Image 1 (spheres, helix red, strand yellow):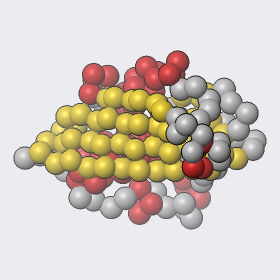
Image 2: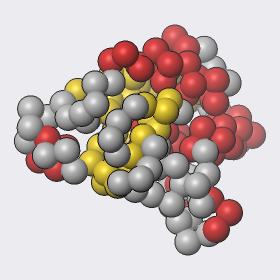
Image 3: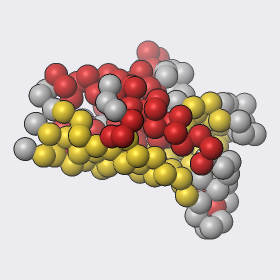
Image 4: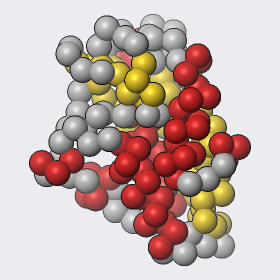
Length: 157
């Protein structure tokens, strides 16, 4: 049986933090605020996987009031979610992600993001799509207040 899940996450920009997206450290003047490394892309993908499994969301699995996850590498957390999926009899068939950021330009980092996410989930790079878009200066993304990400995941049980 096939199961589809959808994930969404958003983080505000914050001074003095690194910008990590899909496990890639991207040069920028600001990073994203969050309890972990604030990798909005990995977070959306985790929630998509969990949604397909009809499991708890990442806030339940990795609560932001638990010091164990302070500064956590989101790719490590993604690997844990993928392992949980396998343990519950799921195979990750395909994932597709979209990141909305007015700046910085993400296209040069897209392939590295795909590779990092695939490696964390122990799937082929061909099974992971990553796209980037702006919002044409509209909304909080367009005003460069933060970054949003969406993901869908197709799992087979």
